[in-house]
Image (cartoon, rainbow, N blue to C red):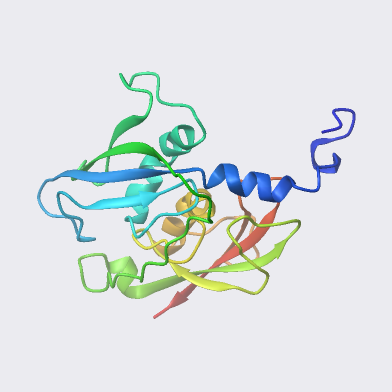
Length: 218
C-alpha cells in the first residue's frame, strides 16, 4: 500500500479482495450456550452451539451477538480479551440481566470457502415486547462504494429487530443496533428530516456500504 496516499485512495493489489475474504473465512467462532436463567424470550437453550464470525451470526440472538461482538471481533482476527486465561476463547453474557451465558472459542478451518449461514427470522410478536408488536424496522442498502465482503448490494431491503439479524451482515448490524432499538421504541434523531428514518454506514470504512433504517407501523 502506498503510505503517501490517503487510506481510501491508496492502491490495493489485484488480489486484495480474495486475500481479505480468505483471511476472514480462515476460522470461525463456536458459541456454546452454557447457561440460561429464567428462560430466554428468543428461545436459546443450554447446550446449543452456533458457528459465528465477525460477519456471520448463524441465528444467534441479535442482542446477544451485539453484546459479545467487540470481543468476538478481536478473537476472530487473532487477538483476545486481556482478562481471559486462554488465547482462543472468552466468556460472555446476554444484556438482558445476564440471562444467557456463553463460551466462545476460535476454531480454525481446513479448507477455504465463504462462511455464511442463512437462518430464518424468529417471530417475536406477542412475547412481551410492545414496541415489536407496534413497529417493524427495515435496513435498506443505499450503495456500496467498493466491494461489500458480505455481498450487500444497492436496493436490498431486509427486516431486523433487537433479536433477529436476519440476512444482514452482523458487523453492519452491530453498528446499527443502537438505532434499531431507538426506532422500535419510538425515538428519532434530531438531524434527520424524517423521524422514522436513520441514515448510517457500515463500520468497514474502506468499502463504505451506506444504508438507512426505516420504521414502519405493523
